[in-house]
Length: 77
Image (cartoon, rainbow, N blue to C red):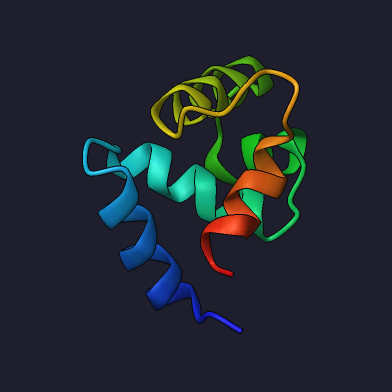
């Protein structure tokens, strides 16, 4: 099992252009938090979180059919 620190390092290695905000969203999403839960925690709208997840999906080159959560979990395998 990968620790959160290791996961962040791995994510930064695979997506060097990821922003701090996107990194935060990716970690929270990997923890199985819903879009609404992340939005409430970060005091952002659900739509803002959805947009950030879309940017992360593009940077990871994930197809629209593949779940972003599954792709984030694969990074740590």
